[in-house]
Image (cartoon, rainbow, N blue to C red; front, side, top):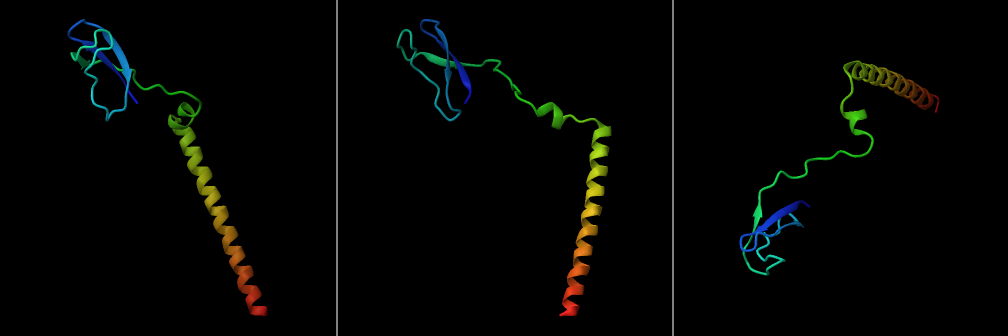
Length: 97
């Protein structure tokens, strides 16, 4: 939920409110209690990335990406070789029955 800034046109009081985007703007000033408040345009807080993972996974170098693709291809080829061997052993067992 965003934080909105408000200003009262009557007493010039300024404050912030933490509201859902779908909430209607507040009209009542908490200082003078008049219905003269309006939401003002502010710069906002921006996006803050916290925790590990953003730099490590989103901004990899080209050399790392090439290495990851090569590893993926080698794992796919080794897994396809295993599945074909298991198919051969399965077909061999059905012939003996």
